[in-house]
Amino acid sequence: MVGYNFESSPYFDKSLTFQIHFFLICYSFRPLLCFKLKNNIMKNLKIAALALFATATTAVTAQDLKTEEVPAKVRTSFTTAHTNVQDIEWEKKGDHFKVEFESNKMDHDIWYDAEGNVVKSKMEITESELPAAVVSAVKKAYADYKIDSVEVLEMNGAKTYEVEIEKGWLKERKLIIDASGKVISDMED
Image 1 (cartoon, one colour):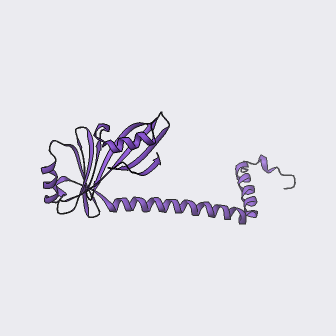
Image 2 (cartoon, one colour):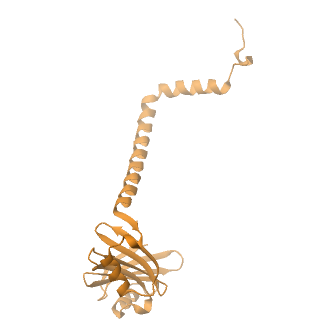
Image 3 (tube, helix red, strand yellow):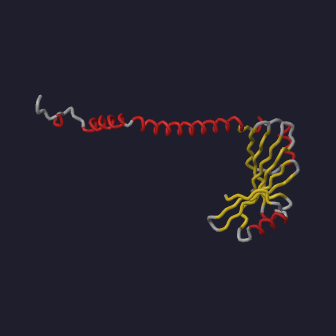
């Protein structure tokens, strides 16, 4: 077998030879490679576990309901207060029943307790429905911005306004302002 040319053999595979050489090189550098691979694998496992946990938590805390699955007291409270609404969707979140619906082309969310009492509500409103103090606070802080959308959140008898403003295509901010015009939160969106 002296002088036999393995490369001319039908059993010779250059890719296999490359794989063997690659394995031998990697094996000699395995402490360094394993450390990096181990860190990357652990990082990816942590991210996957977090994503799985977040999905499972959402599935447990929010459950879509058919209308007939909502307690009668809650349904009665809703239908008595809100007529002529569209796109009604019910959800159970913890101990509360949340209904999302449209009225006059504006989005509304209302949370009820099991007895049919309103816990909190959030509704989309127009700029013209904002209290003067809120409009003044926005114009004072961001005179060159335009109001894009407005929602009012009512909870425990207090109202706050979430005002999204924009300047051109790239600058957007989200302001949370109370009814007196005090800015509670100001974040770049």
